[in-house]
Length: 454
Image (cartoon, rainbow, N blue to C red; front, top):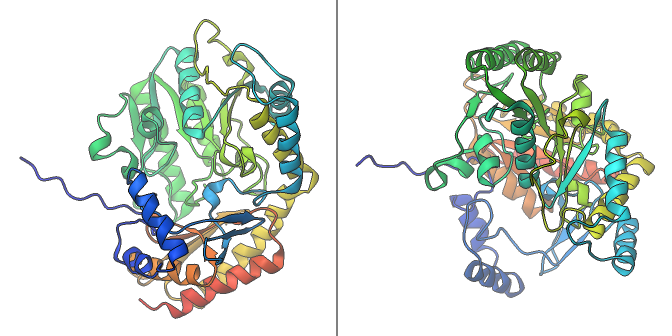
């Protein structure tokens, strides 16, 4: 029998590391410890989630607060917190909708659901105008896959290793993160081909620049589409959420290859859409229109779960089948939350704010790179910036232990964020953050990086 190696989870706050154990042992306040122990007893355990990091008793604006009263600026938020938490206009709209109409059974429609579909069609580029709603991004990705199969008569997909598209079997199959698709998860859905992604700093194709890495990646996608000849869709994030923007022209090349081979292009904007990158849709940076775009997470304003699939009008070819048919597909409360979220983003100029503050955040982290030999790369778009920590810039060896020390040092000082790939500090604040609070958070990151020696 072949021994199976233990899976290495490349997330800095994985609940299986020594640093996590040290943090956990320090959570001895009975108001925290008691709830953590009850949670661990009640819930199935899974990597990156349970046992939990800490507790939460309150969420307001950019802040979360635990049951002992400690406050943290939330620069992660599972990507739902574009508006921060508890935006007054959103809360009021949800309360009013609960009084007016709290539920719509399947096969009946309601004003908020139709209005939301119309609004998304109005905002989406070109002929993307047919919509379906689900309660989560994973389900929405699988709806998009069904549309692609129906429209093309094919079932294969091409997507990236290391990408995350959801936890369902279909979404995890097109995804490329080992944590969600290895060992106990298999066998996965057939026909889900994968290629290595672009990466200007750590190129899997062996190149030394972002442009060269992007060209090699685009050429590989074109090669696979030509080799297979029957791929229904390319499924990808327009900007990898690690974060990692593509080089100029990358998506144009992929779009051309898809068009040559009759393959649809599906963009997963679940974490990056609705203004996070400084454009309402993340793919606007690249001047390319997909055939289907998927939104989620922040669409519910950080309060309610809702996701959306927006497809080209001529892809409305599934009328004789049920491809979504979710119980809460046209829920008036969740659709009202999404409508109000979009209104707030547009009325408060949060897309433009993300672009402006994002440039400031990127500049500060690039300045920090000049002062720390352990920062190998700084990258991002809008209010989603990644700081890659390395042992040294010559070897570019990922500094995972250092990233963990920085993460927990920041947590102790009141800042929470995600560590991607085990060594990339992923800083993703709400779009409503003030410049003063942003600088306060970046001061915490700078201090942790400069003092947490390898």
